[in-house]
Image (cartoon, rainbow, N blue to C red):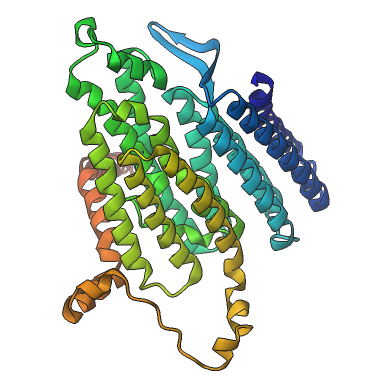
Length: 445
């Protein structure tokens, strides 16, 4: 089993390094070579992942731990390479291998003779490596490494068409959302190291289950609950849950294959994956489960209302994805962890197919005999029927503007960062004043 999961980590890393070396030495790889290479890599990865899932099922889904020497040792702090192989990680690894393989095959035609084809393959390979780290990581420190790799590739693929203005703006919007929430994982790791001297998920659960927890100097209940709270905070942006939902529809500026793999399949479900990985910790703090449920429920309602007012296919799919991920959060909060994992697998597969088919939606309607007969297709009304027509109109108007979420988040960020902005403004004016004084004193007369 160790051989299987190590190969799942090493293979994408070696391929990523190979692509980086060729770029550094300006060795131009042909499109056909890249396409054939990623085809065989995806087939090997899928076979290894399937073998790992079968092995885990044969072992009755037991957690198998693998520990390696620490990379960094500073005082009491150890950056340890700790991995776990279980049904959650191996299943998500299989989903990753299969869907990225499909995207590789789809991109061969979709991005044929595209100038940035090499860049796309390199970023998708980096994504695969980051996801494999997250699948098998057993500590918050190691998960953060994969988390950053996935976030970086996501931002770079949103701005894939960097010559245009809008993709660059929307990639910056994603950067801000990611940075704000990635601080949550950093804070959770720092908090856990300070109070519990470990970030291992299973050790944290064992420490909380110990009857002598508070006698061993691990802090009070509130201090320990903050670790779980920071983990929830860190999962918000990747899952595009409120209040960080508006960046996902804007991310549709990237190529359709990247939209499918990031915002329909894999990256968007990393939030639920992290919550499932940390679920044993949450069971000790029912309030945190309530918070997860409330966030998921409100995000699902928000995305469902706003998505009904959008006219383009990819944006509608983006809001539908946010809504379904919100429902998965609710399932996790209610304790339906196995069903939530099944929901992740099925939803990711469905959204991948829908995003890849979104470019052909017009052709689908042209070939539809109902549309050719100029018949109007009415959408079934669901929860709106419980409101009066006046209230329905008001909800529709606010939904058209996304309930002003962009405006509120922008004002909130501006308010929270005003001391920093004020410092830079003061610094700039102080330098301008000094430069002006120097020019005046040393001016030739």
